[in-house]
Image (cartoon, rainbow, N blue to C red; front, side, top):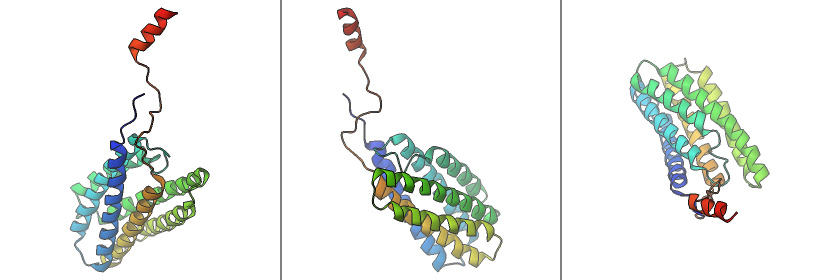
Length: 204
């Protein structure tokens, strides 16, 4: 029986880790430098959302063993790509939209991660409660970003930084604790060679 390739799983897991670290780094940068240009923020957020959306789609189709971290990434990945394209093409004049769009995305991701935490508990993953806690904190910060998007640019930049930092930590811990890559993972459907099927028919 032909084993499933683990390459897509590795790409998705590494991509998740890299993007999570970048989210954390961007969050710290926005907190430390709240006076940073809104246009730079828009471009960075737009590119990050598009890349992370692609990574999420790869993760969804990779079919990892537990099927926890990536189970909602088809719809969420498409959403992030669409929002990222909108933000990228008009970053300077869409600061409020950027915050609202990112806040909604992160709120949804927090809600999805709460479900993942519950599923992780059923799988026997001991750190499920930490995923749950991080998801709740991230979702709450996402709500604050949505409703405080019309405040001053410095406050918005700090709040945006906190949102990115919490999202990065949440995704980093989730993918490390719930994505298990097994080299000899069997496919979901066992494929039967056509020649073997024909021989079996003749014998009957």
